[in-house]
Image (cartoon, rainbow, N blue to C red; front, side, top):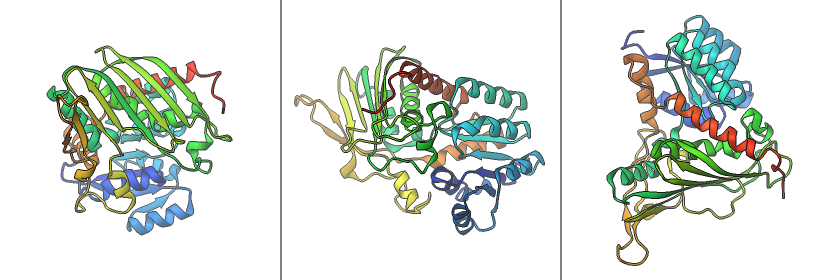
Length: 355
């Protein structure tokens, strides 16, 4: 394709992921032309038509047929994870580049099959691990890389919510074997961030349980990783946390950093504040994290939070398709996250029951 031509893009799925985390970045980046959206839900189809006039709404099969006909340069999967392998392989074999929303896939075998298909087709493949572009995570990465904390020995990362169980959504209906549960949903982010910061790791502890009844998989989890670099990562994720701990607490031998709350790009996007809106991705000073030592030797000092940058992901996707630069997230890195999740579920195969 010409470097000047828009990247003809098809989006499969228009739930939260497709509508909030993918479509806005395509609509606001002139490198892309969102030409097709696939959804089987009539309400979502109507919303897609309203928010993206001129984009054709169709079935998943019809969209993949468009790819097979050579009418799409990029296919984005914002569909349930157990459908990713078949959809991704079909799109790659058709010659399209592919972006897969997290969770990547339910099994390592699925990941390996998709990666093999991408290598055979020589097409770009990447996974939407968007939380690498959270402002608070970018701030942690900057502090770690700058040596402001000294040598880090413990990384604590918490992603907790509280609300009604997702019984009417695929996240609450499918089993862990299909990519369901909090470990795949939120743990995909936390594990990916830990591996990105501190490198390869071994799973040491995994505690999973279904607190609320009637779900297909766990809604509360804790994972401990031991990185080859010596850092220990303690990762907590939950849908049943009435009070949340710090989003990050990073402890080094010289200082520590802690920050509460979640990156504000998601709530902004839900309110229709797309990239380019005033204040997009910015964190108010009152929500900045603190750097220092509790004993008073190093006063706790607010640290400006880096601006969140989800649009950067798709800017790099465009560059990978047009110019052959590396993709924003290597699928083999995402495979390692799936491997750890698979191991955690294997350790808890006999204990996943409600209390």
